[in-house]
Image 1: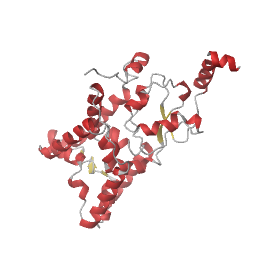
Image 2: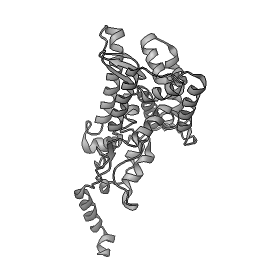
Image 3: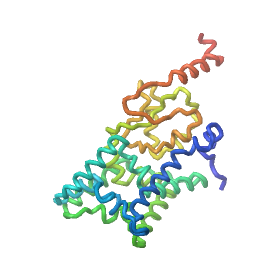
Length: 308
């Protein structure tokens, strides 16, 4: 089967390899670094972080606790220790600044699995467009908390692919490998970005946190957009792009404010016109140079000259 057009191709030709790949590369480095922090102890005897991404102690002094785990613990009527409460506050504060779903794209090791599935599906034009109920992710989030309340246990951690994957790396348990493979195949043949975008309750929780996040992706040069659609092709949550990119039609600012945005930087990498950039939620300015250039180009078209 003939491969489809590589969505980064035009950006690489226009900007060079690094400018068209930097955030993708940096995300992989970040994910590997987080894994290395946890694996350093078992494999080298140097304990940097003890535990998992659900709950850990870094350098023996800094507790870090997933707030979603804390929520389930409270629902299960298990009052956490002071260190767990402190760790949850630290993590929540960090993601409130950086963006809730930054966890999904920069930390979670399952992201590499879903990205690999997406790359393979694009390369071989595998159609994975099954329609799923858009509220499944939120429904599973509610079900996880409710199940903890009913059973008195943190139910989600029994099947959490992220934790299971850590156990696979540490203890050789095949369960995490099976879950990762199932997610890979689900994304490849059923729904593109299906696990992270439609089912994962962790992503749903951090999406709620992300609604108030400070760090954002924006389209300050949206007037320079040539509708190549590369940003939509690489974005795991493409519905977040339109309001910021096409906002001149509705008066919407250039900042992507949806909590679903993962701050992955894929749109920044893939855009050959440099439309997107990282900024903060209060920066609603539009690049005046790009706007003037677009206006000048419009005036130089036959229709533009006729109108003037």
